[in-house]
Length: 258
Image (cartoon, rainbow, N blue to C red):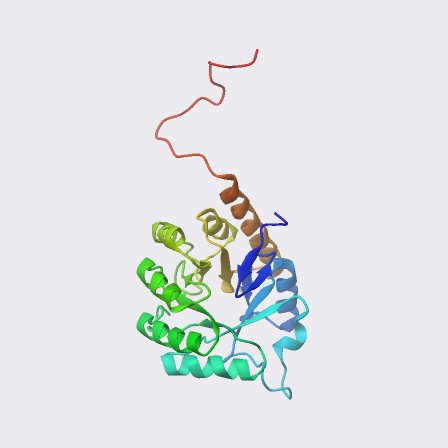
């Protein structure tokens, strides 16, 4: 697996797990979970976590930035204008041009506003951002965003923080089959088997936060997620057997060695 690298925004990574930084008890736990997960990309909510004021406690001071790429996101934005403004703020703070675009359309489900997401993504791509949009599991929307120049598409597995796992594997499979950019499952996974399934479907990576931060043992769950990604990816590359209605003998009568 050492040569099975994940490329995003012109950079290559050994890990296909992207981890969020919210909901931990403190920065020490955040750092420990990130280390246990093996991730090389972490997301930071620009509107909720301080990354700009050096006079205040800063998450970035607790991360190994020599090996970690920061992925700022526009969590908490409800309009395209807010998302665009937040992305610009992150770039001005020196975080870089990589950005996860998240425009919420419904406060209860936290489902994305697709029209606003497409609008914000179009503007930010034109401004030179490397855009990763958080979207519903809609193959048409994924194709449209890829055509706009987004560096990846990030369809949800289930509502943010729900832990429900992948609700629509069929749509994800279609998205993967037609994708010309990386497909990153984002939101809704609950445990390592959900992560493994996403990888077995052929997704390029998985982004999660609550499933680790909200676990009874976040550090243990971070390690489990790392192993789940590895197992699922290996299974995908190995090629599973086809599904059959009836049994097939493991030791066939013809051609057997005696």
